[in-house]
Length: 165
Image 1 (cartoon, helix red, strand yellow):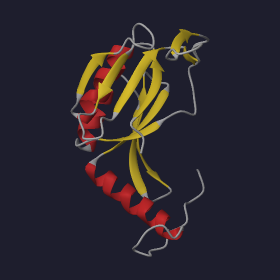
Image 2 (cartoon, helix red, strand yellow; image 1 turned 180 degrees about the vertical axis):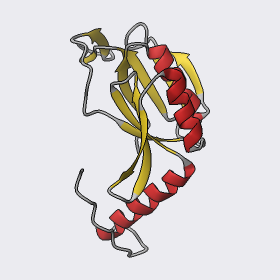
Image 3 (tube, rainbow, N blue to C red; image 1 turned 180 degrees about the horizontal axis):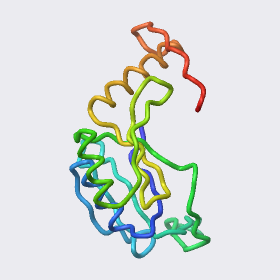
Image 4 (cartoon, rainbow, N blue to C red; image 1 turned 90 degrees about the vertical axis):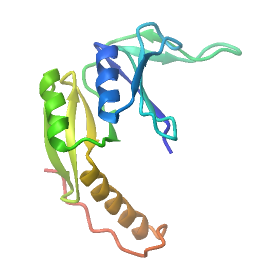
C-alpha cells in the first residue's frame, strides 16, 4: 500500500490544489522538507497524500538523528515518475479542470484493458486520473493479473497486454 508520493513542480501550491480538487480533498502548506512545499490530502481512511515540492528539489540523507531534507538541485522537466489516482469525478469534469489550468489531457485505454485520463501537470509530469468507470476496469484488470500469478482467489487468468503503440 502506498500512502504518499512526492513530486516537484514550478508552482507547488497550484499543483497540490488541483490534485486535492480531483480527490475532493484538502490542500495545505507542507514545509518540513523544504520551504514552498504543499500537500494534497485525499481525505480517505488511509491518509493518502501527494507532497509537492519546488521544482528541482532533491531529498538528502541527514547526518545523525535527523530527518531527511530537501535542497534545490538541477530542475528537470521530464521524469519516469508518475502515479495513478482515483477521482469521484467523471471524465468531462477532469477535462474541464485540465482546460481551466491549460494542461494537456487525453483519454487512453492502457493495453486495451482499462481507461485513464493522462493529465500532464504543468505540461510536463503525467498523472493518470481514473474516474469510477475506469477504476472498475483497472481493478478488474489487476484482479486478473493477480489470478494469473496465482494470488487471487477467483482463479481467473489475465489477458495479455497489447504492445505499446
